[in-house]
Length: 104
Image (cartoon, rainbow, N blue to C red; front, side, top):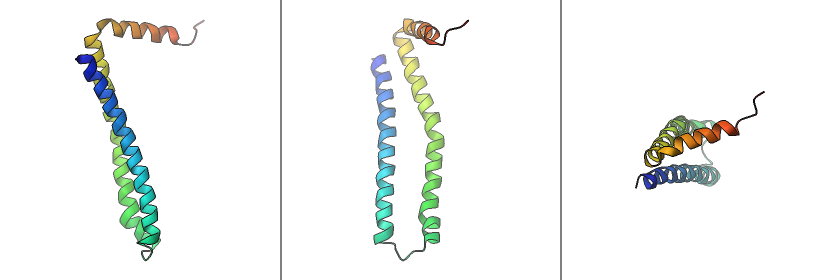
């Protein structure tokens, strides 16, 4: 059950990041089309002030929060795996140590 929870956390994070990236791309494409067809009467300066700048601010908050949340998700998943498989931590540490560059 603990391993399943760790797996679910990792999958949830991946799906969320992928879905958010896809949504943002689709929204950008739609907004570019709307700009030309529906809002052509708005000047570029007003468009940036009313639409682009608020979206940039919102995305900046998301991009700042994403690494923090992703780190917490990964830490929780690693912790759950370590609880379920205690020998995994030392095996991973040993594998990481031997995979590094050769030392003189």
